Length: 147
Image (cartoon, rainbow, N blue to C red):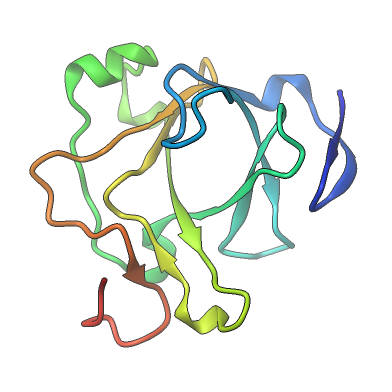
């Protein structure tokens, strides 16, 4: 499939790599189809590109790549929404905010991870309840500084 994107121009993607979000990313209720695009080779970042909205691409990453101690439980009813039966088929990503004026001030959203079932390609963003994880956790600056 060929798609047009604002950030990457026209790209060809494998239809089998499209994720179907059964629950939308917060604030993007009408969008449900996404694909992961490499930022560049060996980068800790990827882009979660909307198939339906060419201008929408979220930078995403895994907290583990930044040595962030991060664990959460997925409630049974949430796992059932994407038919997730095993942690082995889980893809967990977090949205990153990178200020254009100062990339060193990048933050990662630990409170609302994106979970995807790698087997059926269904995903969703969840908000962790009873969590002390922040929405903006600093990636590069002093780790004691969170907002």
